[in-house]
Image 1 (cartoon, rainbow, N blue to C red):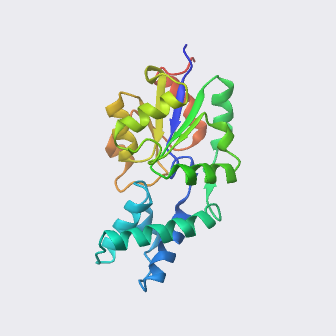
Image 2 (cartoon, helix red, strand yellow):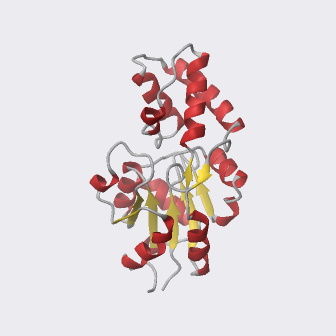
Amino acid sequence: MPTLTVVFDLDGTLIDTAPDLIDALNNVFAREGLPPLPYAQARDMIGGGARRMIELGVKAQGLRRDAAGLDRLFQNFIAYYSAHIADRSRPYPGLEAALDELASLGCRLAVCTNKLERLSRQLLDTLGLGARFAAICGQDTFGVQKPDPEILRRTIARAGGDIAHAAMIGDSANDIDAARAAKVPVIAVDFGYTEVPVAALKPDRIIGHFKDLPRALRDLGRLRR
């Protein structure tokens, strides 16, 4: 079979980043004299990138900020988050073993995220995972972000892959919608960040642990049995 390119979302798929992202959000709010958001509420705001998370957080506070105010919050968020990017963020259980197995089967691995590219690389390198991926692309890499399928298409191309021989692994509507629009099969994890149950988004397969990923890819005809 041709080489399979397996493209992963980052936050809520590869890495449980919620603790550090929510700490950064609440640090920014504290500097504005605002109360912190509860962890469970803020967790569902992850997935659209930092600016979107801030916008949703401000709205949840019952407040509004103009463009300049949001820009200030965004810059403060990025500065704090970059300095604390892996304080508590960790790979999900079974991830590294699954990546090892996929690599042993000849798969090409890539990351397609709505996180900024430099922060994505910083996080993955800090956790010792960056070298595993042929491409790490963020919302600023091509000037588009999920659910726009173009970011997925370009990520696959940058990794040296072929969109006809690719699969997307994600946790949210952004991932599933981007994959569908690009006509790429999509597997969802059920432990990530989504405002609705991932089953309601109707991905091609759902897994609850990374040990099940190779089998799910085989079930989709993307790996030899």
